[in-house]
Image (tube, rainbow, N blue to C red):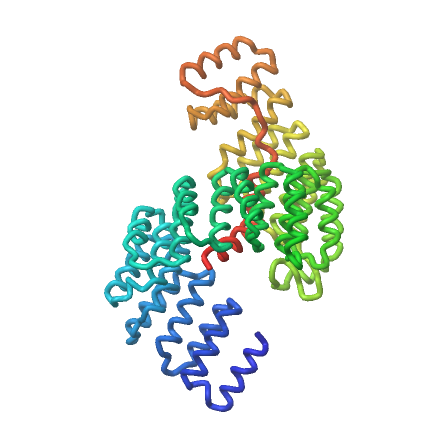
Amino acid sequence: MTHLVQIQAQLFTSGLFQNPSFSGRILKLSLDFCHINYTVSIFQCIRDPDTFCVNAVIKAYSCSSLPHQAVEFYFKMLQNGLFPNGYTYSPLISACAKTECLGLGQKCHGQAVKNGVDSVLPVQNSLVNMYACCGVIEVAKKVFVEMPVRDLVSWNSIVNAFVKFGDLHVAHCLFDAMLYKNVVSWNVMLVGFLNGGNPGSGLKLFRKMACMGIRGNDTTMVTVLTACGRSARWREGRSVHGFIIRTLVNLSLIIDTALIDMYSKCKRADVARIVFDRMPIKNLVCWNAMILGHCIHGNPEDGLSLYSKMVSKTRPEVREVDFDEGVEPDGQLLPDEITFVGVLCASARQGLLTEGRNYFGQMTDVFDIKPNFAHYWCMANLFASVGLMQEAVELLGNMPVDMEMSSESSLLAGLLGSCRFKGDVMLGERIAKALIEENPGNELSHAFLLNIYAVAGCWEDVARMKDLIKERGVRRVPGCSLADLKEIVHNLKVGEQWKQEIKEQLVN
């Protein structure tokens, strides 16, 4: 980017920047750096921007974290006399897809029709993807069926549309009907099986892909490794690791991190640690993956030790530095909210009450991290693990009013699982009844309360609960604890970064 800024400065000083040919090229080059503010600042320096320049800014907004501003910018330019063309609407509609706002998408679709470019192939491909992202699968299908000409992107878009809709059967049928497939085609189905809760089918598809001699990319390998981890297929994961070493020249940071995650979830944190220690470059995501691997799936003491090693590398003044992915230029690291999920979870698993409280205080006071739902979950489980059930309930009651409470029932159910083993019958009964009253059809709450009564020897209550379960038609499920945080961690930052990279490659 430094070289681009130097070129821009030379064009300014020479007076050539206002030449549309030069200014347009600078704008196009700026897209490679995904720095929306820089792209917009260049555009604002152009006295008479043409359609090419406007399209470049729309594409920049579409690829940024502010896709809705692409639509705002388009209509603003329209008022200023913009003459849109076929290249205007593909990134514009893609921006609507990212916002998942059907109203905006339909509005931009109407603009494309009005300007006579709705039959342009890239625009139609974007429309298929947009309607799929907005959940209108029938419209996406209609656009695809009515396309006079289809290319590989068209087929990938419609397969991805049914994957997003959750209809993997139709998606797979369309996939099989494709005369030609590229890596993106295979990745769409692999991600579909993974997100659809069928990692086994995804692994079967990957084996077929490998037998056909098709080389995957980072998205392929991360998806397959994630499937191995979720299904705890240690041997298959190890085989995929070997395949990656044989087929890829260099292992990227994201693949190494996926390997750490896979081995950890297969209860082989020791192997994950070998991968981690051999990595020449580590960012915060890698450290978090390994800390979580130890804390949740392996030996919590190793996770806390690794956290201490990480914090020892951090100078207090580094906390004021803004940098990408938790890595400051000289290699300093900052723990984030994900780091502390692992640390607090380890404290709960080990029953380290004093240490857990200290870590919680360190998170808020030293690193200025606002606790979120997962952190309160961890602390509540820590209290429960040492028998302080009342304190756990009080902690939940004192959570900030602006805290996201949509998963409160799951949190209380997790504590209820602890009640079963701690023998706190009265507290467990109180929580269970509150959960049952909130959702009478929830089988977990009924099963937990039944188990609490059974452990306490309250057989009359057990009989009464069985009758109630039968009367309400609630399917009985085995008692279990929801206090392991696996799914919460999966849905937090580490997972989001991987998913975003996968999503971007699928769209492209």
